[in-house]
Amino acid sequence: MSGRRRREDERPGFDSFLDIVANLVGILVILVMVIGVRAKEALVDAAVTPQSAAVTALIEEDQSALAAANSQQIEVQQVTDDVHQLQEKIADVQQETQLQHAYRGHLQALIAAATENLKQRRQHVDQVARAAIRRKLELNQSRSELNDLVRSKQVLDQQEDQPVVLKHIPTPLAKTVFGRELHFRLQDGRLVYVPMTELVSKLRSEWQEKLWKLKDVPEVTETIEGQQGFRMQYTLARKRIVADTPQGPVQREVMHVAGFELIPTRTDLGEPVASAVSPSGDFYKRVTQHDPEHTTVTVWTYPNSYGDFRRIKEQLFNMGYLTAGRPMPAGHPIGGSPQGSRSAAQ
Image (tube, rainbow, N blue to C red):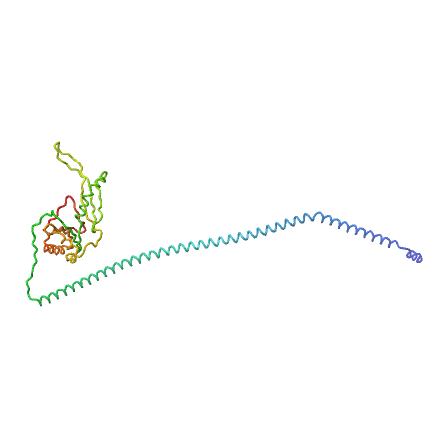
């Protein structure tokens, strides 16, 4: 029995063959599976690769857009923050402006009050100063008067009684002047020749040439250019008069010179009286050119020069001339009109 078993074991085994076959089949199966897997992967790679690239590109674009959107959102948020900050600053500035306006109004009120107070103080100071100056002037004047009185008393004490000589100028009856008349103005201590005769003569020669101007107006004023420091302004007017005729009263309209005024062209006309009555003065030279027997000197005298008029009248009397004084209101120009009067000489 044991011998037989040893013979069976020495024969080629069936199990080794089966192992080999099984190994070959397993290898084939493994190869088939590997080839199938690789073929499947190749097909998947061939089908999926283009779509994956497009998807990747889209994903990248979406990511870029998302990044841009995030960046824009960040910028918008930053701009919004800046706007909020600007609004806060504007609100602060407006509040500060309101405070400054209120402070300015307060300052203006203080300045106005201070200005008014300063004005009142100045007025008070001016009044006090004026009062002090007035008192000082009065004091100086009183002292001057006192000194004059003291000197006068001293002179009177030293002088002996002497007779007082009173000058007397004979005053003849006044008579109306019809001959040659020389006109002078005496104002503010200055004596000036008035070209009355020359201007009136020119008025007579030209006034009728201006009557056409009364065609549409009741009166008109004309001017004659200045001569020797004076110019003449005269007024032409229309008036109605009633004339007696054989048929009865008749009313008619006439044109005439209503009046004239002599207007000085300067304020410093003439010369002081002391110079005028001296032989070198204009007044003396003009007067002495005419015969005293046929010439009257008319002096238009203003209130501030009545004392000077007496001196002029005295000298003219000594020279043999008749004098006519025409007192004038202050500020009133020399003039004449049909209702005026002639000079009365003495």
